[in-house]
Amino acid sequence: MAGEEWCKQQIYRAVTEGKADFVLVEGAMGLYDGDDCSADLAAKFGIPVALVIDVCAMAQTAAAIAVGLRNYRDDFDMVGVIANKCGSNYHGQLVRDALPDDLPLWAALKRDESIELPERHLGLVQPSEQKEDWIESRLESGADLLEEAGILPFVDTLKPVQFMSQQIPAVCPDALLGKTIAIARDDAFSFTYTANITLLQDMGAKICYFSPIRDDSIPTEATAVWLPGGYPELHAKVLSENESMISSLKQFHEDGQPILAECGGFLYCMDTLIDLEGNSFRMAGLIQGTGTMKVKGG
Image (cartoon, rainbow, N blue to C red; front, side, top):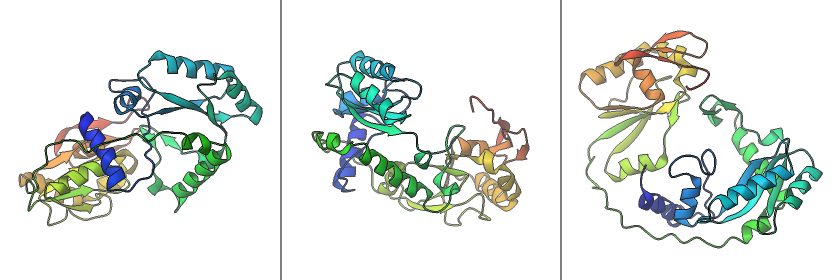
């Protein structure tokens, strides 16, 4: 979506400005699924791939799948395999022995509830909905499990990948000067990318945040509103009952002020939202229509 040069620049900034020692790029869906898939990114950027496979209910077959994925294309480097949800040490050894020497098993991870992240429709249960330090404890447990599985010596063999600053046209630093963008941020609306917010700030905008769940109105200093994605259907009742916030948003809209609404934010702008249990709730009513959640397809 953003282009190859921009993506390279973000990794460059992560290392030079964020002082990152290690950059981990999480793949989306399967290795080859979609246009500009994970394999495409690995090939374009020269990033080595460690393949994670759920090996539950299979052993040597997991090795065959890994080899097939590695050999499907030859324009990127698959350096190892991580076998997830192994039933025992012996299970992991079967996968290890079946892999060729040039595609080693980096780690065999046993089933462990302490590192599981609960899922729901369209994504994961958010850390903000869990107990304090819940996500940190799982990350620490996952790191310990990987270290115990012996992954670090393999990581240490990776060669550095060089990223140079890209010749990207500079944004106009005063394009949004004097503008204040209010971004909805709470348990119902949270799907934002830091890079997008940074870009708005680079263009001169001030950023403030508000909660359609808890606050009474849009911040008075706002000259634009951003309603990002999230899970409004899980909080539809309280959103519907916050009539003062809905009135504030309607007035903002009637005043001709810009509003960007995407995904869950778009649902909030509609007349009605029907949740997964079939309950109907009144929303902001800026856009005619009804949003209906379904078990499959969203």
